[in-house]
Length: 284
Ligand SMILES: [Zn+2]
View 1 (cartoon, protein in one colour):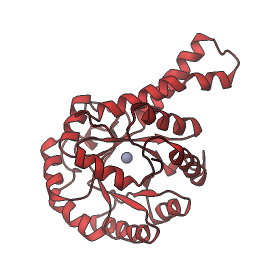
View 2 (tube, rainbow, N blue to C red):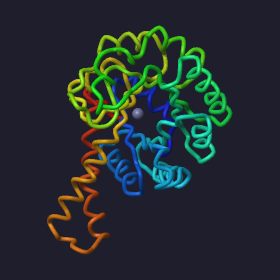
View 3 (cartoon, helix red, strand yellow):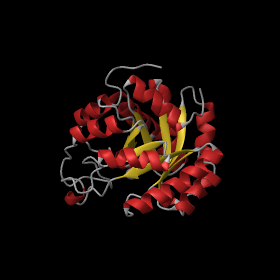
View 4 (tube, rainbow, N blue to C red):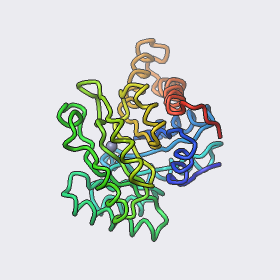
């Protein structure tokens, strides 16, 4: 199995109507348990890293650890660099060994987003690296105006033109989703997902999946979306597991024991997301 390309995974997922969780990592443990959860469910997964955390752990180190685990996994695992907010970050991610990179020009004016995405996609072609882009803008769940109402939602016709002009390999869309904890339960625009799905060929990506109600996520899988970014809930699962194990005092004073103990909870979290995003029971 081993390390596979993000777009190869997503094309298979689109064809067979399941979603692939793309789970954010920030250290060795969070990588290890993403892969363990996928192996437990015998389904694919994507390990991804947000470059804004580079001062905590360098990109090259994360890509090396993630690729190490992916290459040895019993299921297909892909490795991806999340939200790269400019050319240097995105191309730097390619230099640092990420086989897939998101370039995020979604807060730029449309033509600038096109130009940035196209430039990064051209470098991606040279190095055989998959490029995810974003059109419309996925905002912040702490601000209701960012995800309720359609001002920042993806326009289907513009999406078709954007994919054509940029050559991006997958597209993140704004359809009522947002990053981080939501101040109000999101209500995804299913009709818009259908319209964008009908307008473009490339795999579609949902950012901000944490805390979106399960039945809404499953409906979007059946509408043909295939990559599901999860950070907030995974980080929360880690925090809660540490909290529980500190409270128990079984490993009082033993940091190694404590970190070993969170493995079961973290793996179970990943496994639950894989099952959630596979409502039709696909198996490899
Ligand atoms: Zn995102």
